[in-house]
Image (tube, rainbow, N blue to C red; front, side, top):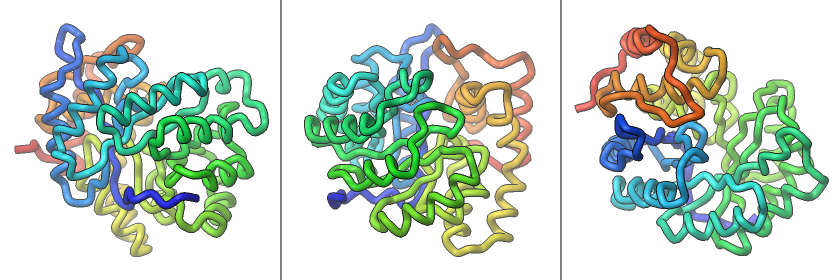
Length: 311
């Protein structure tokens, strides 16, 4: 594995993409969100255009301007990572090139979406990572999808991809603790330089002791507490991790224990309204607003977690 000088050992929020009330991207709000998150000690990067950021709902010019805006928001103090989501290998490579030109320091490379339904041929994920890096020169994060999908990577594939040039970290969201508990130790042993990041927003306590950090949408709304949890996890301080988990549990339930995980992106925006970063929680179709009263649940959960308004 090639050496990439990007340190993600800590909290890596995946920012939402704010919109104006009429549905345009609100770049001023993007800048406000990025400036706040980037000012917090322990935040190591920002990953834009992910699921929480409604990245696949944006036009190409909007995607590039979102990258540029978040890069500007942090004045280059921390790296900005871009979701690379296009399905075909060559078009994904071109997408990575554009992201790099817009200022992205690395890319989070998604599986081809057709694999969700039909699965993938052996060797195809390795080929996609290889080609995207060779064509773009953009360092890549390996993205492990949930075990319930047909595009989750088996251990052999994970080890193959993580050995390739340009791949320096893994965002693991397998959401199968049997696989997690058996595969993460093997990956640690075989790929000791690979930075391992949990993206289990709803299972942070269960994964914090095994990882270098989090790459999560949850980092939008409670970055301070997640940084504390990561520090406690690295210290193997279970009582402290448990205390933070219990404090956050009402918020976890209000945001992530909903009918669909995608609803979490809407709830995240309501949490940011509570914290004073956003003025409203406008989303873009096919996301819809939550049922009436859901925002009150999110606000109450933020209050129970001790989250305050951001100055």
